[in-house]
Length: 296
Image: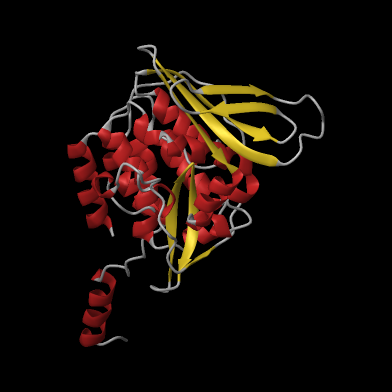
């Protein structure tokens, strides 16, 4: 028969709460959902974004091993810009091994389709597009008082080597902006991207798309896009600095720090959809940043 002391001890043990289980990524995303919902543009749904983010994380083990604050921060950037991560090619969540800190961090990377989508939402652009140029194409490009751009793609199966890419934006007021970048220029900017080192990064799986994105990025500062959206885009591909730190001649790429890029699969196609206006509210951005800090 148990003594009185033994019974009391057993009762005390039964009253003690069960050990607290460590939070999972799903727990963090669920807790952060209200803040993300506040940041989302009207055309996006928090349930869909959460589902897509979880699918991306579940299919990429390296993301599960990443620093939670870094991962949640990348998801929040996607939410604030209204871009869907993963297979559609709007944006990517790419894991990096930060050798300086000894942890895996997540880099938010905008895809070509995401850049085009953001530009269209400004409401001031009638059309915007980019194309790759190959050596067997008929291509003329001139600058000066009367700029000229003529591109007649070859119909041959053998296109020849990739020689560069150009982008054109036509404004609703009748003006336009065009830019061309040679392959050497694109490769130079690719070398400054943390994403360039992985064979499964968009630079490896979708080189042409990333080349077109790079030339759109190059003329980004000349487009009629809100400062709030431009500031968010400055953190693409590891820039890590605010728009106020970028000079007019900058291409907003920085040299990559001591990072080891981890491999992860990406790719896919995006269905066409109507552009939807979006603004990144500064107060909402500050509020979501404070919420993120409290979560982790």
